[in-house]
Length: 284
Image (cartoon, rainbow, N blue to C red; front, side, top):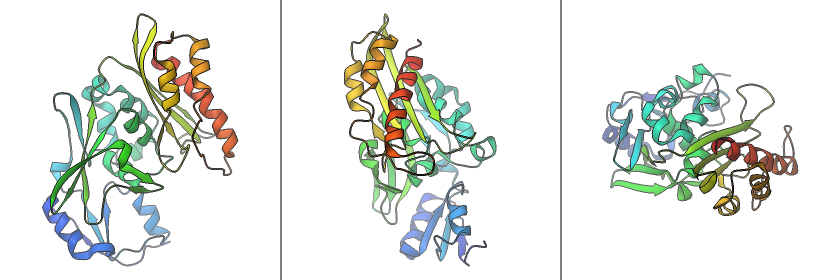
């Protein structure tokens, strides 16, 4: 289908973009890489009067070291994130997830912040960001504020970004030296995950000292497998111990049921994929 008619503007700064959003309110829609919004416009599931393109705002791009965290600009494309030595060294879980995100064409158009702001619970970046304790910097005309990953994902396709606000950057605490793995289950290549598990592990002499685990497509938002994380502390990095801890991976989840599988099937998958992801992250 052809999208409904709309006006278009490409501001050169965050301040200009915020001014346009303030002027048009609910009638405006922000476009980053366009990999999520354009299909919606073509199907006329949304018909904004104004589309605000962030593509000319250079300040929203790039990756930098900021002491105890790395900072990724919201308009940084996935391909740049995936090829970054800085990300690979200090947030390996993000690098692992980007490897599985869609196909090469989309990774060269889609943006890191755009995918997170879209907040699809089947998206590949939400669970790793949640597991790593990412912080989201949101700008409005009244200034900026920082929101933790626990508070950023509110519900299905809903985040803490308010009306007239923009996500400008994502701060990811360094997990230097941690093992990481993203285990994704799909029926065909480049599909949205039926279930996926993001795991990062700090090991000491064959024992798991810390583990952080995020679940993809197991509810209306990305989720933490907190029960499993606690059970893994001090456990040996063996198949038997990890299997026992991973049995609780689906606790507290509410996965969807669709043509790819019902909720119970996804709960079973979560336990299997969690075991695989943790063992791989621990180097077993």
